[in-house]
Image (cartoon, rainbow, N blue to C red):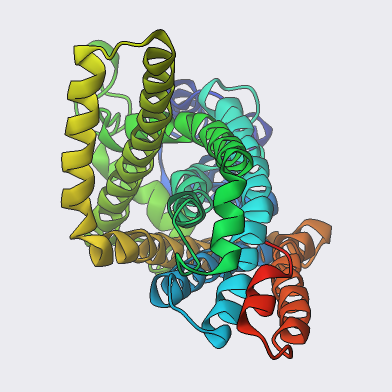
Length: 397
């Protein structure tokens, strides 16, 4: 009887409801018939992996990005506005590193967000699900977050005063305040672009995580039964066996951290966008010679909130890296599950292959270290001068 089953009909999942109906039609959810199409069914529902967004190289790249952003942020908070030649040396190097970090991390994030969005659109609308199953979809929002959340550090810290107020270097920056303001607005524009691209993975995963389940009695459309819990458990057992999947606690930890991190990103973006808009209104009203009540109220509200947040800087410093660390752990955990499932099904697992994209995922952050090294070299030569004012007034800003 198993020889009469057409497994080729079960290789591609475009719409979950229709696919489950097709599986029932071909196998009647019996162990013998399901086993004959095991590779096709498991591959269609859960996929294998997609190296473009969760390969070994880009996954390490996510870890490097998070660690680098957090490390630079801590250094900035420790050394900013300290006076002395040695402190200024470290301030120059760190500022250059934070600027370079944003420049490379933001385009890395844009590439990942575009890839994730395209794959989710293909899956959600049933266009093409090859290599992008339920496991990879579960990873998608965590990946979309992990490449965005380190960007909050340079956006928040680069506009702050790095050098001591009395240093010639800080005074030179203040003379070029208009140019620095334009740079920050351009950074914020790029960050907003990343957040716009991030919104679809966020929306897609929210629907997946918090939407109604279609497994169980009466869980289908119009109260119909698409597949019973026992039949679904039979398919899961066939595909994963004793492979340790995410527990309910791990699943909820992932979902809750994704929601909190997503809200943090969206609120952070709105806060900075509101600041730019408020400043623009102030400039227009100043030019017109009058100040609107709405602008005054918004400005006071923002100042009150800013003073409140100032007292929680440590929490705001550690919150992105803690959330990012949990999501990073989940990404590597799901990679291990995919690898073990592929081994069980006797299919090749491409997530550990070092291709071009995997190498680029790590090397993309090498220029940050190079720029910091060059800044250190040029600043070191300046620090050899005898006069502190000479040191402060020279070098790149």
